[in-house]
Length: 394
Image 1 (tube, rainbow, N blue to C red):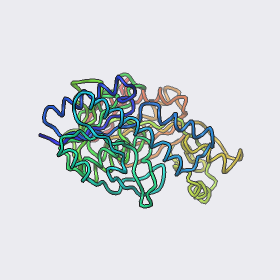
Image 2 (cartoon, rainbow, N blue to C red):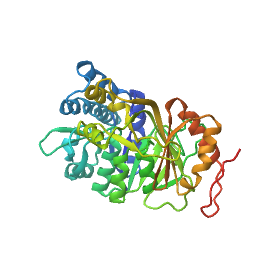
Image 3 (cartoon, one colour):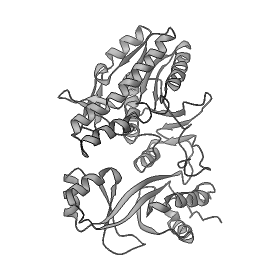
Image 4 (cartoon, rainbow, N blue to C red):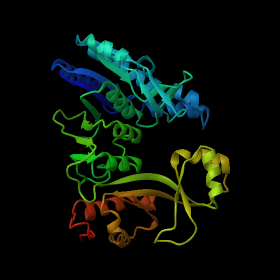
């Protein structure tokens, strides 16, 4: 008998039919003798619906009240799943994060998990209950409801698995694992069988949405291996995320952050003003493509707040996307990659080097074409000859 923590994302619980399918999967595992803890996200689209309601009242809602509102989505999912399991004659109990005892730090809207109490969950498991927990939420030291940021249910599952010393932590989503790039952009993207924490951390940080960044960081810190699986495929093998991968390609994959905004940075003092207003930004230093002043990239999520602070006086350059090529040989391929994109007529605003990663800033209108070009020439066909440069293949 194993203790298994499973997490189901919004598409996995996106309708009553899908919730019932999840119930059958969970009951099957329970009937095989496993103790089951299930963490759920809000139903697909529900968080956006609640956020839309808030913004009908205020473009920038009060952070505390926004967390109170958004946390409601997961409570709907957990209750419905518990009902579906109970209806099949199996005991299930739903718990909010506060009922479990998940405490957080770091403020509203993007809090971090500080501690997970196990007593309530362990007691229910010993009574042969399936435990259903609302993901994405916790309570701070002052008793306020907090949320963990987009995809925060992943972090909830990893933290619970680590606290319970679970045998497995399984993240169920709408794709059957981690892919070399977003398969919605590139149809030839391939599932990665095994990936190490450092590489997965880099990909999550730079836009790969299959796992939330905080969940990867927490798993790495606590050495909690993860398996990413599809909730729509019974025989899904998925991707194992673990401390060290046995083998890994010289270029593992391509992560994307689309719909960003590029501005000229007048001074570092200006960036400090932005950050003091809660506006996250990334400085892109001078690269080989251009030699003019430094520039700064701001996400779409921060645009309303940025415009409120600066009005229309911003020095806007372009709507951009960051394409990050991840792997030990990525920077060795820089010139070949730039040449491949330039042959396609794709303008490159900036180039940035990170550890085992090459980041390219391109016009947002061209990012899908850029991803497909780089994936075809540097991921699908790889030449690994002792860290020598990988060549573009025509």
